[in-house]
Length: 292
Figure (cartoon, rainbow, N blue to C red):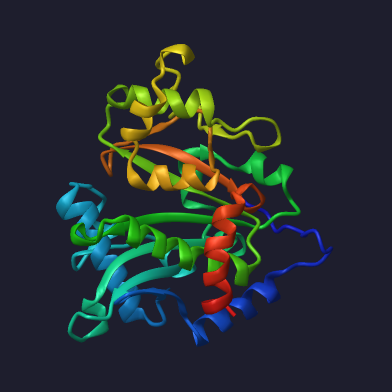
């Protein structure tokens, strides 16, 4: 589990982070593209809208099965939600109320709030403690529960979500992004080409090394390196994972089968310093426009 961290400036940045969150609540618009806006949820009704969207995608569409105390009133909710910021994609062209306009969401859990929730969500599957301990001067942000309604699953919506995430990271002084990303289904071998590509070409090492928990570890080394077809592997990647790769992300050692969500999970590790300059320039201009 996480421990309180002293950051590189020699002080606890919790107050700074709380001030940044207050600023985001006051001017919560973080990006705009046509009729779509990305912003933070500002009240319980908007958080409930995000949870309802997650229920539609994860449970009704994809067949996730969680304990009854995590699914109520057709909402996907767990103990982490009260500690998170909830990023919303809102289609302003749809009729009111605003809760009916939410077409995409991403859940953001800053490190200090992970302390209050007992750790990061992904710690159930991956060993994050040693990684965080090696980087005590850096502030981590966990990204998770990403979903978008089918008509909005496009490059445009993904770009808008990343506009919002980047503006958030700038305001909240985030150094490292992490979190689970998923392949559909519980048969890892069905994704042998893509998982082997991640293992051979995109696996973290050295000071950034992390791995799946021993009890849940499934090797991603399913094909020899020379047998992996990079083009075929990338074509087989879910859009979210391809998006992380474009930004410069690496992935932990091993994947995990999530039998509740019927997915094969990998852990993304993305230091802000590793994001390619072309994306910094693109998303940075949006952060300056909406995140200040």
